[in-house]
Amino acid sequence: MEKISYQGLPNCYRLFNECIELVVTTDIGPRIIRFGFVGQQNEFAEFAHMIGKTGGNEWRDYGGHRLWHAPEARPRSYIPDNEPLTIEQHDDFIRLIQPTETATGIQKEIDLYMSPDEAHVAVVHRLYNHGLWDVELAPWAISVMAPGGKAIIPLPPRGSHPENLLPTSVLTIWPFTDLSDHRWIMGRRYIMLHHDKDASEPQKAGVMVSDGWAAYFNKGHLFVKTFDYMSGALYPDFGCSVESFTNKAFLELETLGPLTLLEP
Image 1 (cartoon, rainbow, N blue to C red):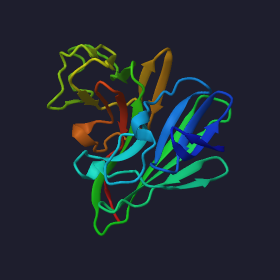
Image 2: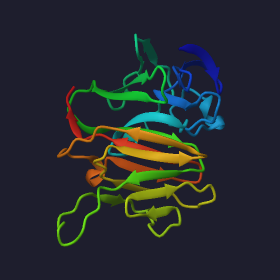
Image 3: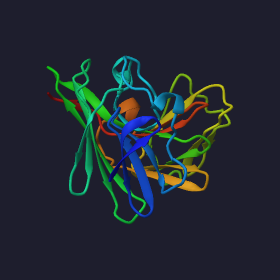
Image 4: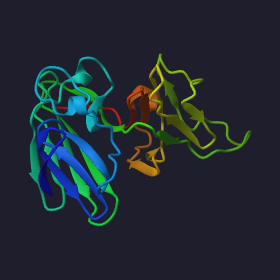
């Protein structure tokens, strides 16, 4: 690990092996603001007009990868992460610790384990409740992907009728979702959502993905997120473990954990 300056943020740390690199910062966050092959494109979106700014009461979309808690609501979900945080270096991982959110009593923490020789990073997301009462929430890992690619969301194994009579997944839509939009592909094995910089309206959908993965394909690179799916648990947004949102600037590949009544 080495300390660097990145995109106007002076207190950044680069983790790398011979294959991949990532950059985190202690000036804001917790966020991974860069991830990619060494010396190549950032797989995450980054917004130069935002990323050097710190402090203040306005939530900023710095891009990169961040941790939220679901379900989405204003102002709870949009508490700014503009302040400095703590970084801990351990033998085989680093830990990013955000100050407790004053408005919610929730504290966010991210651990990063980089493979010594492969294009693989394990990310552990934690939420702590430092408030006075129980809070129902779910961990929500949001990767803001670089423009120009497509999200790939797997569907469960297909079957035939009349042998298979019960449903096997859930598709959740939002009031602004338009499944006739050209960015959607509803396939037999996958749902795909393309990013289009010229599109005028946002799109979003969520799916119950029990296979524990979703992906983003962009410029010849396949970015794959894997996660543990807990069968029988209650997930946010009518049961979604994967969601994807896009507007003209970026596409988000989002994974969610089960809803939990988090005690102080």
